[in-house]
Amino acid sequence: MTAGTTVTTTVPPDMAAWPPLEEDKRSAGQRLLHWAADGEGPRLCLVRGAGGSGKSALLAWLLAGTVGRPGLTIHATVPSEGLTTETFAWELGRQLGYGALSPDRLLDRVGADERPLLLLVPDLHRAGAGPADLPSAAPETLVAELLEQLLALPHLRAAVEVGTSALLATHSGATVVDLGEGDGRGTGRASYADLATAVPRTADDRPDWSRAPVPVRRRILDAALRTDGQETAVRGLLTDPGFLVHGSAAALTATLADERIPVPGRLREVWRLAALELTAYHADSAERAALLHAAAIGTDPDLAEYLRPLAAQHWWSAEWSRPTLPVTALALIPGEERRLMASDATGRLRTYDAEGGAGAPLTASPRLPDEAAASSSVHPLAVRPRSLAPRDARSALLLDGSDALLPLVTEDDPTTAFALGRIAEHHGAAALSGEESLVTALGGGGARSPYAVVGDRGGSVHVWSLGEYRDVPRSHRVHEQPVTAAVCVDTADGLTLTFSAGADGSVRLWEISAEPMPVPVQQRPYRTTALAAADTSAGPVLAVAWSDGGVHLWHVLSGRVRALPWLRVCDALALTPEGLLVIGDAEGLCGVRLRWDGLWEG
Image 1 (cartoon, rainbow, N blue to C red):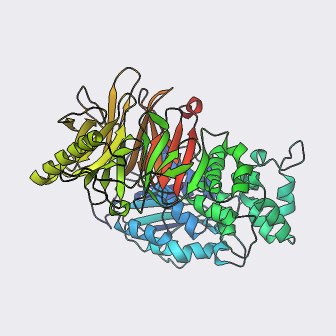
Image 2 (cartoon, rainbow, N blue to C red):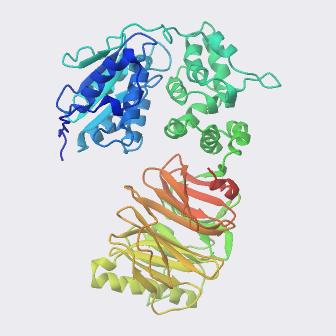
Image 3 (cartoon, helix red, strand yellow):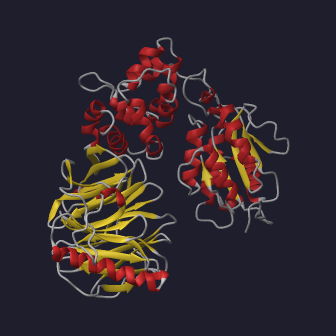
């Protein structure tokens, strides 16, 4: 199937099989249903009518009727009230499976999509947010900047609610479903004073945004921008952490984009870091607090302290941040599970305290042993590790950006140098004999004894002991595609679990004394960027970072998965048994506390 392909339903769906509809709406419902089912008719349906006429309810009826029924698929429904071009694009991208994208990138992805797409757009006439004198406040801007281009694509069809406005009226061939006069509900705009009065108060007379009605939380910032005392009203909302957590994320995004509006501290920068995730996870206030706190902890310490009590109510929250150069490699040091070894983009290696984030450089320059001289000194900038497997705090295997596997020894230790050099030599020789043996991934692990897990282009995983010399590794072909990440963990019952990711987005489990699991433990249409594992009080846990920015936590014993939304694409991970997840990304390192007692609930 190619772009532009349509699906024709020759027999219109029977309304009797759809949810009940009021008698005076049945004619409009039949017209809307026939339009949706007719793949060769007009590609735009305008749902018109006055306030309270039932326009949004009619679109909801159509959507509800498609659930569990083959033949008619609605690919995305984007309620547009309070959305700007940017936030509309983010939400549509998420629903279509692309992730949050800018408007330009979204248009490119939709244009390349081979599916015939059907969209519902309720409340277009209520779109827009931010100061009234900016284009982002008007629904016409969303139409001109995005919707018109989407509707020009031959494989996209949309039913759009426009109220009594002239939005999209230039589409002369559009189907029109007009519900006529309504009861007038929702036609007026409440004043800021009226909305503020509807917010409950705490015992010490502060606004309790957690109990405020949803329409109030959604509309009060825009009302504040229109009121006579605009500056005072807006400042009161932007300085209230409770409103930042519970208020409309779309309205806050549009307002904070206006550089003319004064904001406390570095709120504008903090919000910019978190906006993509905040607009996606708006339903859970504790998660919003955790996301805002994570953005503030390395940017605005005062705001972070205000948000900390709210963030601490969630099953994860950031504990510390160490802004530095982008982190490319990260691993716990075996035998010292409160210490980390990490490399930045320049190749500098440091050790860190996992619990507090304090760091120190390695005490000597890396030395890469060779047959001529095991003590040959190499400048650290000659190597830029993209992953590493520590043996201890003084030695490790490194996978360089050039796909070379290299031993690192920072002290004069010939035995360690020989053992690590032998592993590097083994894989170097194998790669010379065939491209499928080229090393593509490296990870570490092991509580009883340190391991190095090597993955190659042919999909095989090789497990080496770093605690004792072995001439050959334990090896198994686990993937059909090149291995992109690997890690292992010892369990309390004596098993060694190896986790690896393939270029096809699969994550697989192999217990090294048995056969690999026949099916992936997880499969997504994204690249895995990092893996980490630990044997915790809740049992073995695997952390997986994906190229769409998500971090998933997999409980091995139950198979349950929880998603931890992160602010940036994660490039490196480490996980302690006590539940500290250390994330390395383009901004440096951040320590995130996981609460095992609440992580697998819900």
